[in-house]
Length: 392
Image (cartoon, rainbow, N blue to C red):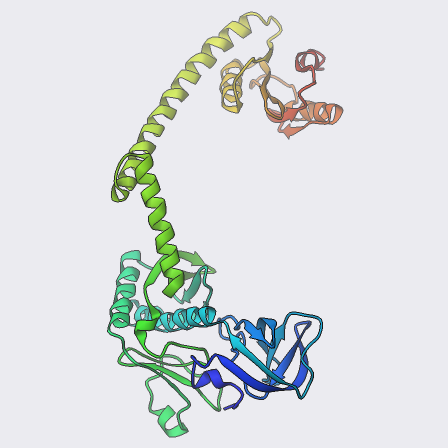
């Protein structure tokens, strides 16, 4: 065990009064090595600590290739080698990471015992922590049951022991996974729940974990990824979600627990309205197509609508080109210019895509498509009907 890593034995030891023994550059950033440090370096999916050191902001902590802990600080001038320095770890960040890491151990154990899902990797973050499980599917109800199991153990305030057992003791421990190192194996034991090798910072009792909430379950690289939060981060997330639910309830004139049903009703009403609009659009397009074809002896319908969008252009184009010899050259105004649709009937030999591409180049617009159908946007100042009339 490296004596300088004081956080191994006491995760709540946050103050530092130590000597700078070296300057070291890690990942292109300069930092200091202390003879006794409570700062945790990024490792095992847990972010590095932050805080202050002699008035300088500690922005990150990393482990060098030789194992030394490098405290990275802001500012052009590092404390000199040999100097005594005082500082403190950011307590809120440390406690949050302790909560997340302990919660991750407990969730990994619950997923293994209840779902047969082994943890292959994890990443801790106060925005969303993740556990990747070696299974191809995961039932959400079963996952929530595992989270509830963890929360019960949290509420029971079980002690969490963190120590470096001797080889004989280590051999007899029921470890959830094999250690990644051969020597100086550190073990974290959550009484009656989980025993795992780990070098991270953890709570001393499970009650310090606080609330644990499941954010999402998704497939990721052939496995299942569970996103979660715990502690203060979970409280912030739950409070934000509660505010959203209350806001939705106010908008729908109902309670927050009835908001989901109100949204379902709104979606149903919207689907009905869209279906009705589609039917009306089809009737409108059929009638407008008949009028336009009757006024176009050559079978080429050239129209610039006064209003309408892409849906209207497409519906009208489909109605016109139901006549095999017809050609539809349509435009409608929009915020960024003219929406244009060029489409031909089955018996027409007109190359819609080639025509629109050439027109777009000529007018500094954009668009293209196949010989049968093309869409694009032309600048607002373009005389689209003249362009349509000049088509080859």
